[in-house]
Amino acid sequence: MLLISITNADAGYINGTITGSNGEYLNNSYILTNQSNSTYSNSTGFYSLSLPDGSYNITISNNPRFYQNQTDNIQVSGTIIHDVNLTIKPTGTITGCVYVAGGINPCTILHQAVDYSKRVRWFF
Image (cartoon, rainbow, N blue to C red):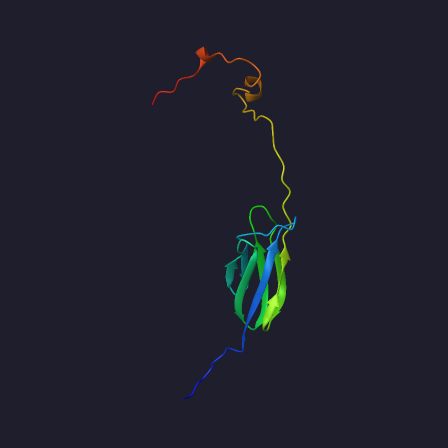
């Protein structure tokens, strides 16, 4: 009996974990190489890409909450661990009123009773 084992000695992996600024694992982060290989991270932030040996640029994004990260010239030969911590984008709250020239100022409507007898009716 003859057994033949064929292995691809020229294949490697980039494995890693994607976390956010607070150390939380980032599910569904998109990992893309400059050779159009791609995958998504799982619920623990883990991802794995099987790639031929070579040099790769990796872009990792988790929109819209985090800035994307790009790492250039990762040399793949065997298994490479490439963990990434994404920086959260600043957030804030916008409050106020928008005034349309010639229209009703919504800021004054919020603070006074409205006379509905003067409404404009549209007929089509």
